[in-house]
Length: 47
Image (cartoon, rainbow, N blue to C red; front, top):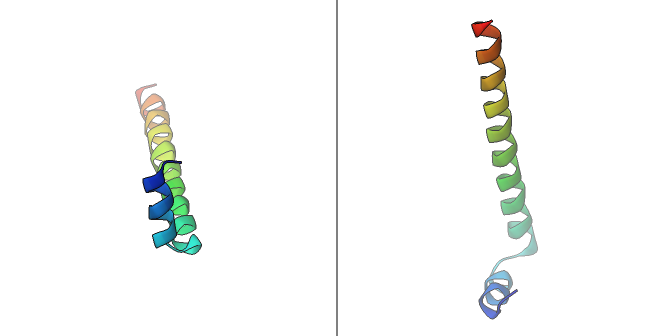
């Protein structure tokens, strides 16, 4: 971690940081599932 990262972390509460990470993880999972479901439905409709 750089100095600016440490300063930024001290400005936020731990809960805010955790909440941000959880939101990013949820967004990533949703995007991942959307991509896989889309490719799956495309395969089944084309066959």
